Length: 278
Image 1 (cartoon, helix red, strand yellow):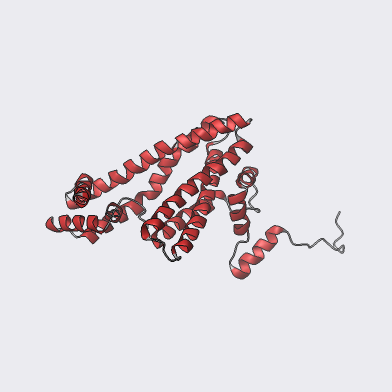
Image 2 (cartoon, rainbow, N blue to C red; image 1 turned 180 degrees about the vertical axis):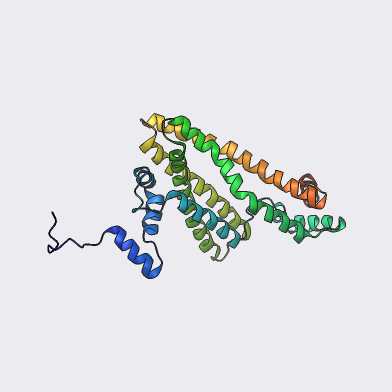
């Protein structure tokens, strides 16, 4: 029986420190540890999630939702089209934008109005398309280890995705700083942004390889084959995203403006041919 007069160990726990920080300054201190370990030690975050340890890290899904939303804010800040729009189609140059604008004007439509409609439709459906395009990865993980629950595979997929988001933000920040240097042209800067996306994709596979080595593969060969399978899943992912984006744009254009995505591609292609002609 415990003596009520006996001094108890009142040393604060990690959870106590987190609660005090959250109450005092509105910051959950787990976020810093979660970001560090997600980026550098991805399997640790997955292992804590499997163990039900909610004190050490911010939940993987919660972090994904935050980073997913932040990604679009960062893309918008840098002026990068997030989906199919007139701006994305006219990204080849001002001549393409002017050609599309002139064609729309002849049809009695405003470039800004059509572009806004396409962007709004893309924004409303992006989450659904991301979910659908993620299914090939999760289903493949399920095939690698059928005994694990589907939710467990979702966590194993999302943790490396979070790591890739963090890599993307870091690389885009570096590109933004490089863009401030004299002599850096717009085309070079755009190319660097493209490489930023490629670098974040590579980091996803690196992080996924760590997770596979910890929870799926039993040998180096098995992990290599499993990572190769994930690489091939990029193909159906892009197919789903492309079909979804262009299908949604086609629905908006047909129902609202009585035109087609094919019409816009035709105008853009004709402008490209004319601009290359001597």
